[in-house]
Length: 414
Image 1 (spheres, rainbow, N blue to C red):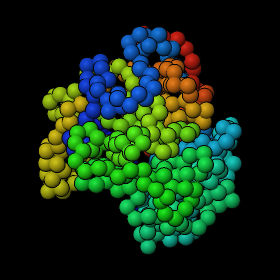
Image 2: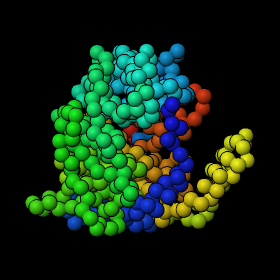
Image 3: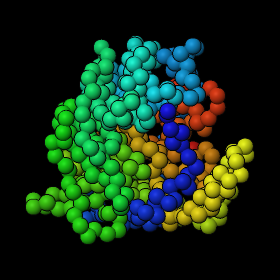
């Protein structure tokens, strides 16, 4: 059975940030970063850059032809990932409520080229929960807990169909993506501090070739529960941990991560070395008591009235005891295009206006390119040079929509 949709009200982050610690400061500053001392090239987007940047808007959407008519995605179908294939093609990975996984191969024009289905005929091949994905050439690699055995294993699915299950090391929880040489980037289970170790696996092997780095004992503060740095004998900076709450994406040859709640995204090489940073100006991100109370009231009012009174009482008590972090996070999502553009969705703040451009677009050379508006009440799942794909957040009909990106000038909104 597929878990409930992961999109939640913003302050559900609160308790997690209390455990993780925060980085940076508020009030229009990116704050002090652990990367400041490492000499990593940085592109900062300040007031002047925001004022000069063009604002890209969206045209009228269309249902992606591959999922139009009878092929429309059911509301209960979970959209796991949209992976970029060569020549503008895409692999759209979906999971049905019963655990059947489908990989839809879609042409650049949005036409369905073929579907690989896993678990439709054989229940032992159905997913029992979350699946994570990576792309190696034209092969989609799935990681999930499968069938009645309850074992976690890799399953490569080529255009010809599924391959054979491959053993997955204990303690390694999810795939993040794959580099051009086929190396898989993966993260393990969280420890008691909320940190997880990262591994780079050689192409489709059974055991990890090497751990990036194990966290040394005694680290405190931001470096413990989010993204930590340590020096090896050669003085090189290594990444050793990442909290899974924070956005992360593989875009071309770099692993991009929002390492703390500060307005900062860092690009890492496959060896875990930071090579580029993006930072930007933000308004005050402090979580006020009023915002916390509003969040509690919204969640309590959304409890199902038909539940038994004792269940409602427990749920209400759990909501009322939630504690607040000092700040809102800065990043909701990181996406990229095949040519290396990086799209960063800024976390929505209570002070934001409804039509404020939330996305920052950076070029392959690291330069700041533009701001981009978000579709209303929809989650962006993929981008390319001319379009973005999004799916409505609610409703009985939740199709996969393709929006044309209209490049324009500054409209005064920030």
